[in-house]
Length: 234
Ligand SMILES: *Cc1c(COP(=O)(O)O)cnc(C)c1O
Image (cartoon, rainbow, N blue to C red):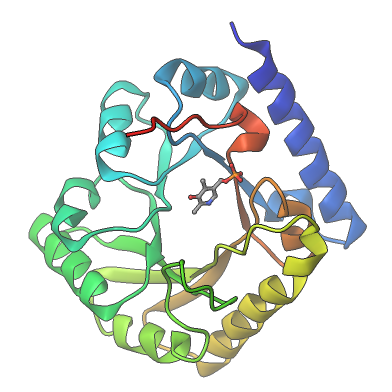
């Protein structure tokens, strides 16, 4: 048994609660997603035993493989870039897709969801920091993308997601989290039919406390729970 995962989870939950109380938010306003990409099923089981029910994966095949063997009460979050030809494998398995950044991808989700007669919950990913290397719609185009996706009957926009830059000092990302919150509020004020602005998915191991003080409702923590990831060099 890897006790470290449980200790880490306990630590992360404590820090989430402290961040909430530091800005007057209720602790249950922030949900923790255990980002388990690259980690073996045994590590996920450890987190599950501790009480985690929200897991984040960034690759379709890995998500499906883990979905097959893990308990069915898990809420799976697709947090990585999603190719249109792979949508069909996950639409009926994921609780929330965080990474919708184009109308074409949303249309593909609509098509597969309609076939299965389900509604699919999504977040629109916004590249708030404007980093070249990142996916996501631009801050300027986010509102109109949400308006277009709202017309798709089997797709439910639940909020926004961003991946902030990797920085040494998490305070540097505060402005990006604040900006995502601003776009979120702008969209709420537009009262768009079929749009339910409830979730702000922002903050990772290095900066989740700052994200919480700027309004995050989901934080996505991998390294802080499971330790460093090792990527094969091929
Ligand atoms: C890997 C990943 C995370 C978790 O990153 P850590 O720094 O390990 O906490 C969060 N969000 C996304 C989209 C990721 O790909």
